[in-house]
Length: 338
Image 1 (cartoon, rainbow, N blue to C red):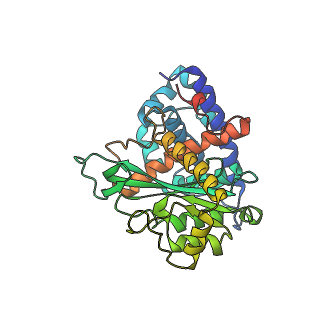
Image 2: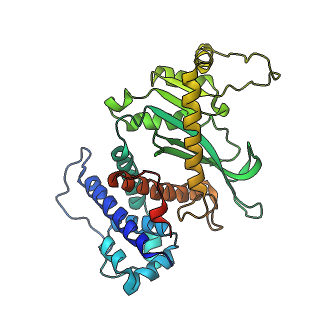
Image 3: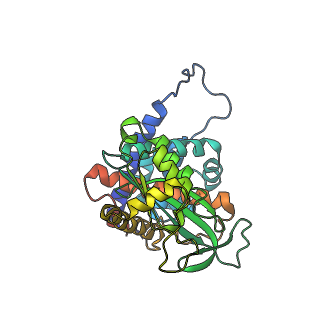
């Protein structure tokens, strides 16, 4: 059973997210207000309440069935109050609604609002990108899982590509089969962060950090032309023998290799590489209820794994957002783990 102090922390997170959902609902995005009510079968449970219910289940580390059973009990009165439920829905209703397009659209808008509200001055000065493995057992018949490799060796499954801010807040992510190289989604992930920022925040973009797998002319060109900054990564020798000079390919890579030789570049690289490694370690820690290191057996296919990871990263980001509002260390998770 989860400790009682965790309940108060989860209720506080749901309260913060409920305010964000109210702001999302107030955004018309250029649409005219609806004068007539929607036709069709009336819904007893609102889309925001089901979205918050799924996030609460991930924060508690419970399945949907166990969370519903707990909400029906007297001890779960706080959860029913936080969700605005007079009675608990059936599991089939929850599953059907969570797989609907309305919940997915609202989740995407909440994720965008959550990231924008979490950004502070200077958070986009340094963006760090990295990949971590999401292995699945070989005996599992997953149609989209492939073989890939990391510094630890070969594995079978998927890859999680993540971009974080200077303070460690997730800003963009992508799940791909393990055979996809790290460079494939890198430019699009950074472009997503640029699209998310306003004009003042775009002016803060100065450095991008990645390991030697991101040593590419396209990425150097993107940071120089779009972000007006530098991309820092350990040079990839591209098959040259140890001790020989690294071959420069393209003008942008040649300029980046010259900047890499400075002490400033080495300090920024070392600090933020360790930061994203610690964020990946938190996401893959099996003691965390929202971990992504062990994919359940019933989650299969690229779409299913991506959707499952999305919910987990949304729960993790909600904790960071609540910590920032509270004024404590943003990546402190002890209040939310039993």
